[in-house]
Length: 242
Image (cartoon, rainbow, N blue to C red; front, side):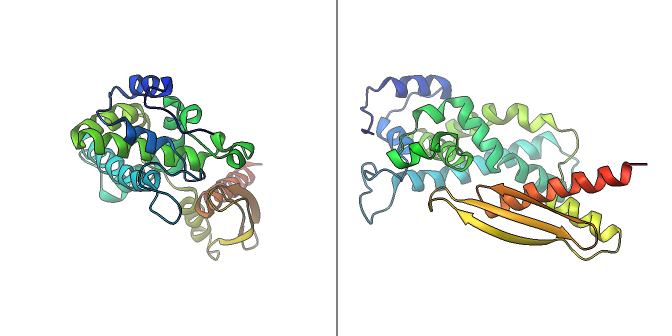
């Protein structure tokens, strides 16, 4: 796929959704050019640093700080542990990918032909990375306050949606096992497939004498969380049955 021109209509549409007109549209171009492409923007190239990945790194930190501030303000009486659980849930791959889709990054990002064929535009890992890269591009173009306001707008509903702090499935399953005097859940990676930039992990979790469940995810952690959630649902349903 060809690299977008600076007057590409995708730029204007995305700027409208972001509420920010880039002074340097090259930053937005870099944020939309996935490393799977041979051409890596202005400063990349073979063996060089990928501008996309550098912006992703930057955007991850910017989004994290802005979301942490939102939680600190929204829940003034909550303990650090509860705030941390909220934070982890809000900046994880799933909400990042959802926001990317809401912004239309799935249509705007440029991918190599192979990643296109592997349905890269629907890959949550790629979408989440693109979301971070675009936030990083806004920060690099206009500074923290502009990026902060963008994050606050994109995450506002999600921050106030849950009255109680979420529990990670792995933590909840561990607590379930400990509460019944059982060994801790054991996780096993059954397989890892796909290209290095878009892997798929197949993981199994087992609780001794109680059951096991398999799940697939775009990262080992995501697959473990999905497997833990599935097994926990089965175990709690079983306990609730007469």
